Amino acid sequence: MNIVKFGVGDTLIMKKKHPCSSDAFRVLRAGSDCRIVCLGCSRDLTLERRALEKMIKKVIPQEGNAE
Ligand SMILES: [Zn+2]
Image (tube, rainbow, N blue to C red; front, top):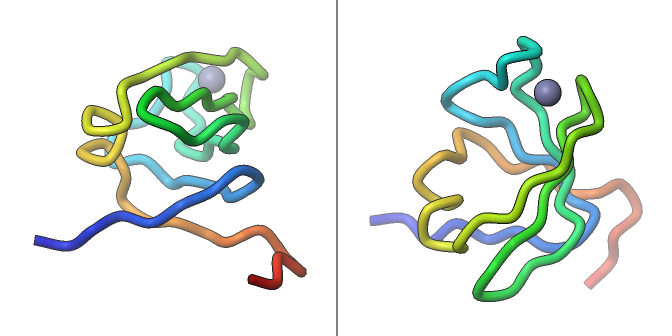
């Protein structure tokens, strides 16, 4: 099983689209609870990290985000 790595500022592509038809969300907070905002309609939601990880199809790292 893959470990999904993401951090604040990264963009997440979800397996399931939001009702607004966007499938891209930006990470606002990454902890045991994660806060993400929809890039289509700007609504934000808070999810448990484990639940969120199951929803992610792809992680697009923030540009210029040097570790
Ligand atoms: Zn949306």
